[in-house]
Length: 291
Image (tube, rainbow, N blue to C red; front, side, top):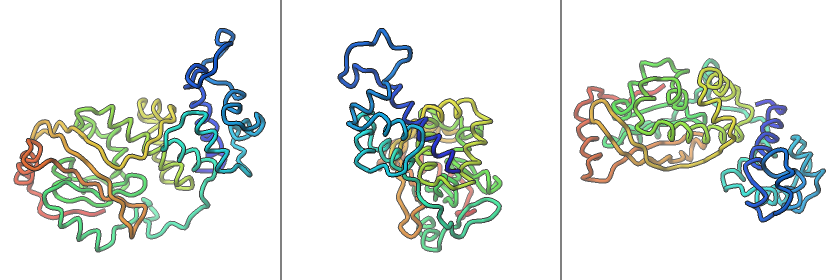
């Protein structure tokens, strides 16, 4: 993401967060009837954060030179930011230097997985599991994940992206019983990733593609919601098993910090566990596949 884009994202994020608060929310009173727009004024945010108005205004304009962690923390408290939103503000205000990405395909930008991760994936025979890259690209999967979602090997490598499939693939879109909640969460996680890797041209291209082709994505992206969850629960409306409620966890791979192993599980003996057992016996896929 070019530096000018980062500056714009910072300003848009701060404006969105102060527009979402009312004076009453932060303990201020008076003058509401005279307001032309909802939300807090810049002067009120600066007062609540105990920083100069000019200082805050420069930050909202994307001029972050010299801004301290203490000032960012104070602004976060004034705007009632969550921990994830505070981390996002920090990443936008102090973007990382351009890194040297390793072992990525020039055509797709997809890294490979190492042998140890592949062996671990092979050993997971009772739970669907995926290895995701930092952009939520699907780098590898086991047979049960293919049975749960689809056979990713049938897709071109540059289309094996979980967020892209959630929005643009009719099968995956229909697979989630609560699609909107899943999609909103995916956008929020992708926005956090975009701040962490601002120089990733493939990530920028993905965001651009989704913004052009899906109205829902474009609307939710403009809301500036951010989230960095690593566990949760999803309900699938699977064509073979029917409703399937699974817990998921995203486990960081220490050897590749920008890769995660996502595993879907169900309590032993539960209906979902029985459904997974049936799905495992039903699938004809015999070997895990990799990108």
